[in-house]
View 1 (tube, rainbow, N blue to C red):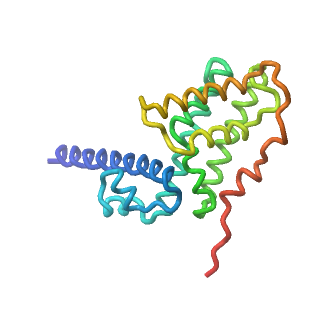
View 2: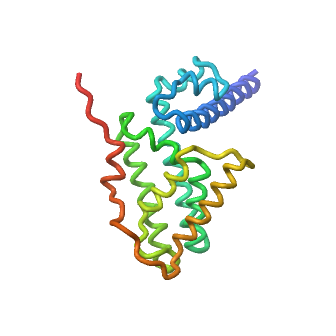
View 3: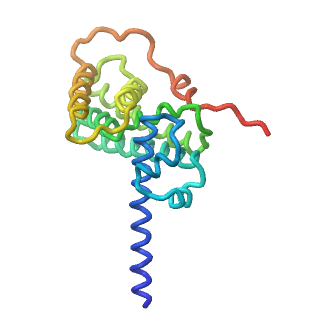
Length: 217
């Protein structure tokens, strides 16, 4: 009996995890298409789960948004760690960009300023940026990255390419995105390129979008 109950609990846990992945994937797609005004009902319908199931996992739309943003940042951290473990700096950097774009991290950019961020979210964000700075510094030290390119340049590049969310595999949209991304990555290479126009992006500008006014009672 105990073994049967254990298998039943594992089965329910596995089902809950599958539902959670479906919800988060659906939320990323829906928010990419409709921005912060997208409804929870749209997300539940896209994920194929009931509203009750979604609200049992996430007490509010804001809770879902925060989890979605945290997940995206954690995926970027994993991509940066993989980049630092790559055999050479260019492979690491280009694989980082491709991995983040493939996940559609930039799709969450329109959410900036629409939800209250937590100290944990800020810490995760800055940890990811510190790792990306190491990825970029390694590429500069090996002489493979264009002079003047910063970690925030790379972060903005990922955001611009991922604003529409992940492209469906095997579609023309995916082929076009991969082609344009290859062109952009080639532009990052250190090949006697001229100086970049304008100043490098600042951390203050990058973060300002996510800062919300404190609520008053």
